[in-house]
Length: 301
Image (tube, rainbow, N blue to C red; front, side, top):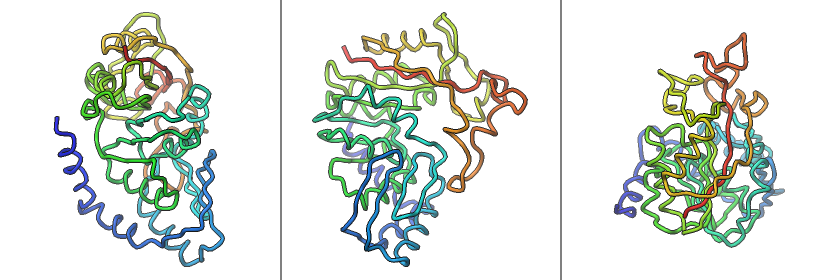
């Protein structure tokens, strides 16, 4: 795999017709040097020197980039109330993180919210991977003012991670695996980019049960068309073993609640409230068990 060639090809996506106006708006934004960055539940960027005209220009650009799935962010008093209150997931995983001096990858990083939060640990570097030029543009907007040289973002997929062989100490893959039609192949790609003994943090939809089996949605799951497999925990553990991981540790099991994922003015379309059975919140609109996630940590052999 010529990963450098793939990276160059993917960067050309930023010139796509529907993304080009966003990139142009981004290019015209004011450069503001005297900023203070707070890496808290809301990633906050503030400055006493920002004018009302500059703030309006920044807000216009940010609204061009709707939908904002991950966050929230506060840009000079502009509160980007993302669909997901992502600090809930981050705070759940934070006690298990030890990232100081490490090379980290966030696979399926969306707009980089978790990457910005992880800067608190003083890692060696963080590479975010997500194929979406929209999410890359949101990341570029935030990092225009955070100005972190520790962060790198490439528009790649999980299948490209084998092109970074033995590179990372820690890899996060949050909310991605159920979108893959071959989850074991995806896990193998993650294993290949880890150093031996490196750790993988993973979360995925799950179903209850002791047997190593999976729910295979007929068409959609919670109105999501590309959910292929929803495993029991024992099935997930078997996938990890087959992919070459060991030391499977269940960290948390959490049901997705409406206070974590909900519709706001910063997204387009529906959110969790519309994905559940209106008469029974324990079921999706399709009649499947409502979304529940398992968070695990495992290691490359």
